[in-house]
Image (cartoon, rainbow, N blue to C red; front, side, top):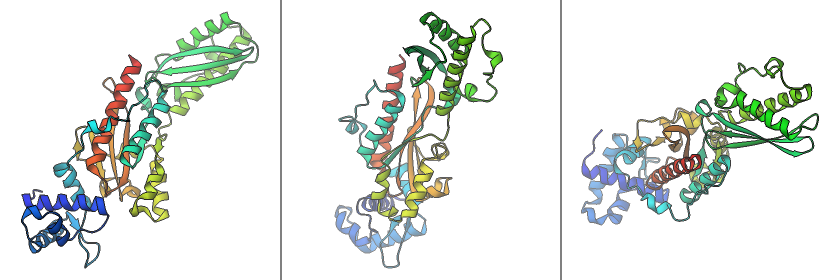
Length: 346
């Protein structure tokens, strides 16, 4: 739906004023704050009424001013947004490339929350295209082994295994070669499935009985670690308390419902929308297929390793969100995360 220039200016002003003040915006407020328009209060009042009839604004009380509807926010994001420069997020936003992936995602989310004041959420790399790159076995003491599983995403998972008997170094090398032949290059989705056979029949016949037992223990430990990280409901959530600071969520039951929904990883993959800014997706209120999120907006962007989609990062806040800041911030940190992962894999 198209709007004339004056209606667009008024709608943009209502959105920005409401985001800033959390108060319904009236014609007199607009006439005084935006005197350069040269438009009288009565004319603005008529325009506000027409915008409300068209569904872009709503009036919470009969005598109150107007506030944006989901449709109004959508038009603002698609047509009127004055996004902050992404360069403004660079100072103090350094992502440490030496961190392991889990810590890297938490660190990035924490920075995103700090710079937007919204709850941030990230999904770990999707299991369907994540491969086991290599498995390292290192003796810790007489009968303990440190198992390190390196994935194609750069993520490393460690497990400590107590063997039934002491394992000589030469046997550990041989064991490591056999374990890598079994797991390396396979997707974690395949390994986590019940179809992936780790029964006694799969243990190499040339191994001694004691080493066969160690092999079985290592294989089970690796599979258990892979099943943990292939959990699709796992998300990284930072700044959850930011929701408590929003006037829209003073009702404790609302906060509880939203937080429970945020902790389900499926949320980040259900936020599809017709409105996109670059590769950022903005889902506003009732556009979200998750009913519990109808009072929230979700701004997300994918991050990549090379050309492969690895996961999603974003922020969640009220529909009265500062989109001018949230959209470029999410885009900046998604790009930064992609660049960091590519650096780690080089």
